[in-house]
Length: 306
Image (cartoon, rainbow, N blue to C red; front, top):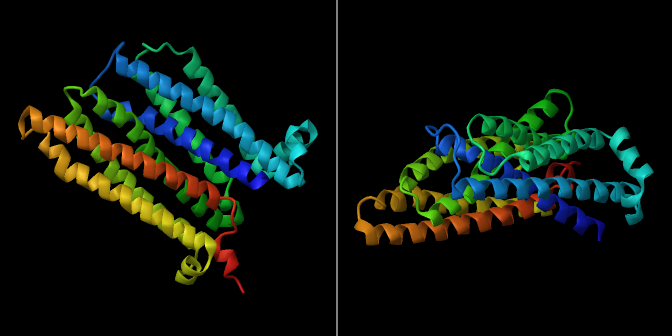
C-alpha cells in the first residue's frame, strides 16, 4: 500500500514538473521573434496548462513527502503526524532537498496564480522557465544519486539533473506542440522545425546522461539482464526508442510534406502528426511511470555486488 502510494505520488510529481518545465520553455524557442503583450487563445491555453501542472507538482510533492515519511516510520499514520514529518524534513538529506523543492513549487504556483492569462510570455517566461528548471533539476538530489559520494556523487547528480531537464523539454514540449497542431496556426511548420531543433539537443543529452546514470546504477550487462531493475530499464529503453522513431518520422517525412502536397495533403499530414504526438505523449507517460517505480527499487549495481 505504501509502496503503491509512493509510486503514484512520484508519477504525478514527475509528470507535473516535466510538463511544467517543458511548456514554460516551449514559447521561448518556438516563438523567438514574438515580443510585447499578447492575448490569444493559445496563450490562455498555455497559462491554464502551466497553472494546472504547477498545482499537480505542489500537491504531489506533499503526497510524496507523506508517503516517504510513512515508509521511514513503517506506519501509514506517520504521514499525518507533524512530528514525524518535521523529523524527516529537518533530519534527513531527502527532507532538506524537499523543503527547498516545496518552496520552489509554492513560488511557481503563486507566480502563475497571480499572472494574468493575457500577460506577455516574453521576459516573464525566462524567469518562470528558470524557476521551473530549478524545481525539475533539484529532483536529482532526492533519489539514487544520494548513494554516490564525493566526486562520483557530483557527477551522478549533474547527469541526473541534465537527464531530467532534457526529458522535460521533450515531454513537456509535446504537450504544447499538440495544442499548436490542433489549432493549425499558419506558422506551424516553422514551430515544428524549431521543436525538432530542440529535440536534437534533448535526445543527445538524454543518451549521454542516461549512459552515465546507467554506469552508476546498473554497472554491467549482467546487471541489466539479470535483475528486475535492469529488466525494467530495458522496457524503458524500448519505449524511448519508440518515441524516437515517431519523432524521426515526424521530422523527415511528415513535416516536409506540409508545404508540398497542397491543402488536402497538409490536412492529412497534420492529422498524422497529431496522432504521432499523442502516441509520443502516451509512451512518455509510461516511461514516467517506469521511472517512478525504478526510484523505489534497489539499483542493479547493488544487487550484483558480491
